[in-house]
Image 1 (cartoon, rainbow, N blue to C red):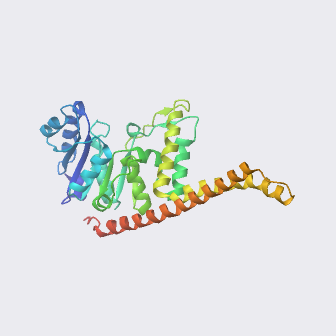
Image 2 (cartoon, rainbow, N blue to C red):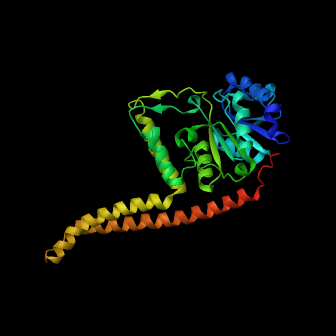
Image 3 (tube, rainbow, N blue to C red):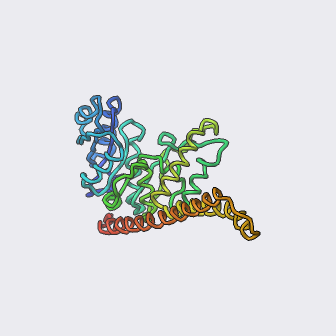
Length: 316
């Protein structure tokens, strides 16, 4: 097909982690086979209790099975076991339109990127009125931590629809239990400084909006996610901030004791114990931050070596 000439001669694998997606999987598999006829469609059945695996196989997909549910485990198994030049991540529930697949693959190849993320209202790009956090606060915090590589980290982090190169996939470590696989992939690209881009699949439609009241639970979830990201990728900043906070608290507690001692008055024993304990906790947090930062840098160097050991795509 002429619109996919850039991908001629390249092996493309469509990855569909599924769990109890029997109502939709037939149409999804057939849709990707029609829109990417040169691709091989793989379905990873996450211990479904319905006929997902049988329907997917009948529709023409190669079915892999896992004994334990979990999208992160499924994707990492597929990344490890499937050999291809381009990997197209999607979902079996029908949220990812197969008609958009060629656009993602073409963008990956023509722009010489390592990851293209499809964003749309259906894929988690809802905007929030009355609150700047998920509409911009999370993105600003993410960009301050990792640079301006993502135009909208909130929508891009949530989207499961992605085109990936072989070298990104093969350097991707097992997903941390505390992070979703989409978040972990976005974080992996940010840490390595991998060239990425987002592609809007909404066709000019604006994402649906949520009120700030309805997004209260989502706000808490985003805060928790940001803390988990910092624990994985910026532990020294996280624990250093906590250490500084407890250090200041200890100083506030200790200052009256010091002034009382200089004036010749006896310091309270309980206040002294609390002040010393607070300083010790601050020191412990700071030491923990340095240890975790050292481990993070070692892991990052290993990921860089793996990434650079895989040749980049040779595009005609």
